[in-house]
Image (cartoon, rainbow, N blue to C red; front, top):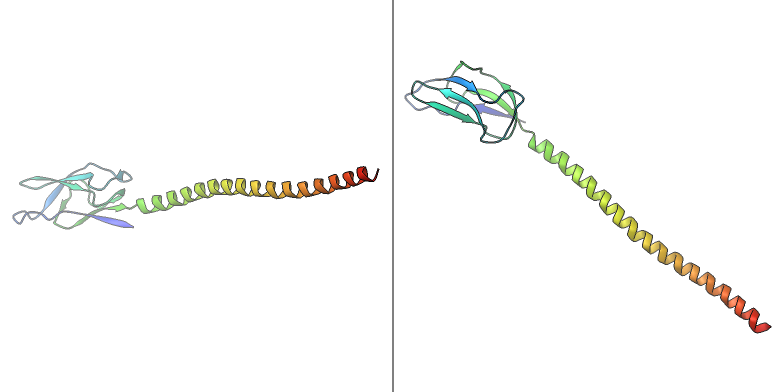
Length: 137
């Protein structure tokens, strides 16, 4: 989703401003409140901060351009949501693998116990037969 970078409201006595310098360039990763550019008016120099975190995807008005209050001068592409989703899926897969290994070990122990009981019954029957043969003799 694109977030618009707008010229902040200029004081009443100031009708326009000039983009003095873009501190960040297209493709740069920016954090919310990072300074993106400086605007000069006949009275002050204003810093324009990023309205959101993401990637500075498009500079609409270049250095030297004259701009007015609330004009869109650039765009930021939000990447947090995509990264968060991707990270969430990766973490879920890692946890799933860990849980799978734990469950596999639990099942392995259960099967061992079942097999142990089966073998125990088989051995018990064999021993009974041996004892019967001994008693007959």
